[in-house]
Length: 236
Ligand SMILES: *Cc1c(COP(=O)(O)O)cnc(C)c1O
Image 1 (cartoon, rainbow, N blue to C red):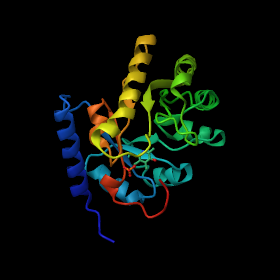
Image 2: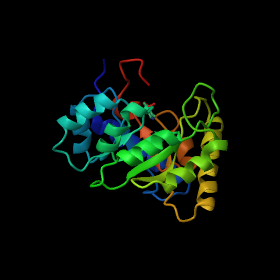
Image 3: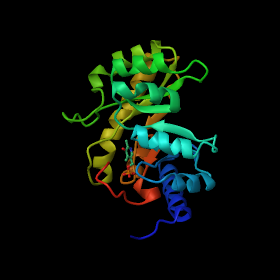
Image 4: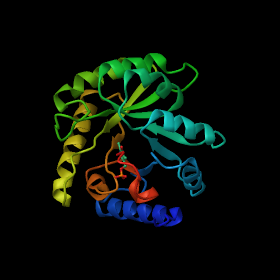
């Protein structure tokens, strides 16, 4: 196995992001990297933190909680839960994360809102949209998005920040841009409908489609493989 040198992978990913932002005519700070550390050890997160990375994304609750307790001394990390979320896991997510990107139904939103501890700031939430309309995939449909957003905006304890999607894989910049364009348009429609909401986040783009996502306005790029190397398991 080739060893991943984080100073190199982080520098490479940052210059990819900078080049994509510049090509899109966007400001250098208009988007940032969310380091997806699932299946990777706490020591790698600590090393990435040493390089200045502060936003980390995790998919599996127990694994994330274990790493958070190992890294409790790093109190300036922003933790994002980005994996599928079942109702029996909402309490711990509400207690231990700063963001959730995978809210796709009212029941989950209501539980997170009720279970967010009162002494913590509101939990930042993105609604996950099934942007490629794949029958088996999680995510709210575009048709059901606005009513869900309206409900989430009415709940205390959580703060709707934007949208997240994982498009079906495709090759070629134009093919990759199409679903990201739909997500951007969906966020623009929500902003028009709810002008007072703080809808500033498009969580889209991963290691293989960063450029396409940035071209369509991504603000948070969820990068795993490009930063930490390939994952061992079949977990995605
Ligand atoms: C694993 C994962 C990523 C990172 O994917 P890479 O292709 O490794 O960059 C991003 N978002 C979600 C929701 C993931 O589960």
